[in-house]
Length: 160
Image (tube, rainbow, N blue to C red):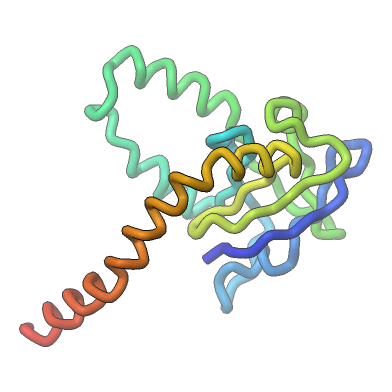
């Protein structure tokens, strides 16, 4: 699971070092290959290959109109890039994704659970300040239901 916030420099070629903690999302595995896609809100979303395949498999085309599916697939997959760490733990951020995310000499890495995101720090601060209210609303619901969900799972297991 990915969590935390890290800042790293981006060199003139668009290479950035992936924080070690993000390379080790699982205790027993170190990742050296990632899939980058245009994320939501102006960031780059980064997945391991396995998690990216699960993510794509979870897309339900029936939930979108047919023209939306085709448009989304064209835009989504044309902005998808597989990258591999070099011997210094860096990846090359593709120019298109870098430009769309506004990333130049510095990158902000944010853990997002099953993936992590790479942001322009100023863009994230702006996005974050606009999202605070909705975060509080969702967090209130999330934290209020944590105990109940866990308790319901325990009760279901006990019943078996």
